[in-house]
Length: 95
Length: 462
Image (cartoon, rainbow over all chains, first blue to last red; front, side, top):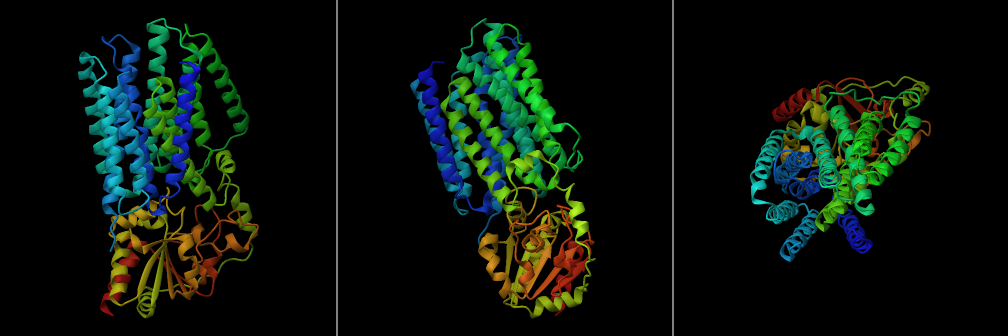
């Protein structure tokens, strides 16, 4: 990776973090548990990297096996995280 | 990379952001979560189309295994166990980042003899370091929360110098791993060191500080995903990781403020073990007044306003459903009935709200500390169920108390305070609660679920 690419990624990081702080500070405390499990699901975005890492042919590559392990772990995060958050949010009812 | 794929990642990032934005309103939160899930699906599909057709089967098998485990856990977990589950998932996220980064390093340096440039190299070691700490730290947090590991602070001499030494060693291993890529040993040493550090940094932290720790680990799992984004030069990982990282930091900050503790003092650990001496100095024994179920029922019946202060004890006793019954009985009698929620009640941020929502308590009855604290003085009956430290007036009055300065619910200001408690045990912080000796305070001893069930029975007959 060259420095220009790094600077672009850092822009994304800084603006993304700032946006995150602004948006999440407004989430009401009532929803802090679903916020946490929901953001947990989002952190499962590593699945993108895991899929790319599994893209090797043949089963002799250490990198492929690590990628496949990462897919399983990240999918648990993604699917489990979104499902449990939905299950919780469904329970929040107004009178 | 194909422009359509880049575009799909952009859409996914936007959906994550809109999803979190919708979490700002309780009524729209569910849609927000679903939008975020759609974003994830788009990101996954955009990635799957890039891989070799022959790898697809392996990838799908892994996704199916992961989905099955995820769905099983998501639908089986009890709401009381949410903190454990979040801790466990945080850990998986961390380990996934470690695996992806080692995989990338291995593929380039070991299998393809390709020189990894310094920026990617630094990203790889950071991702492994943060991910490794997140993984084992979360596993210890999970063990402590589920009772599989001793929940108290585990402290031994030389703990902090040892951690510092391991940290320095990790930096050295990181530098070597980036410089000498031919031999993978340095990267493996770094991995081992980060896993060890994760264990050592969480074991000295006691149960009362767990809400802070899970929030912080949540943030770490986001940062790990973020650094993986730098490894792979991928924006969607960075945006998503940054959102999660920010979320965890904000929650950590809220939890620390609500306990009047600094993040540094939480991380150094040991809270709850040193405080007992200060409590003993308090001197005079607290004399409490007991109340029976019939009398308590009469107090509720004659009240015009009731505030319930729930704590983790309510969850342990599974008393939330019978409390909802109590609230319905009171509302039928036109008694104003609300819940006062302290930010650190329970074992994770917002835990009480989820438990009460599950018991069908409407969320507009759940009031935050700052919004309800001035109203306790006009309230007839405050009913404390399984909460202790969050209503201890010592936080306001006794500078010697370990919890002095912590914002509390002003339950003591109500006309009558009824405390449902199993026994005279201390709260999580190990501090005596002088509220129990106040003249307006009555103790309703016994298992919360059983006593409140009897209370409801009495009220029905009135």
